[in-house]
Length: 120
Image (tube, rainbow, N blue to C red; front, side):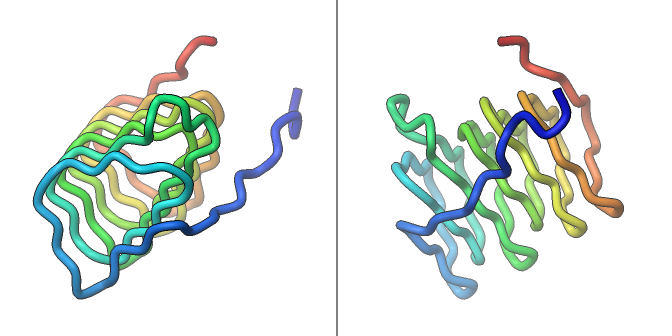
């Protein structure tokens, strides 16, 4: 059971730079990397089971996140739902409920809300 799933490798198809602020919902395919600020919900297209969202230490999201594979190292104010894999790195801060299938959480990561394992 341990180690039965491979760690998700972050690919980048779309980059939101550190000096960029977006207000509105984002629906994406492939890999989305955020260094800036997003105020709105973020989700992957339904057919994208391999989609990856990466939020850097400088990045922030105010809104709900629903993506199969998520790597967080920044701040999220909203609910997070990772249908496959969720990594909370050392600087991750989530204020909201978190739902996941597989989770990896570093010492120092913070969740202010509930953690819920999503049943298959």
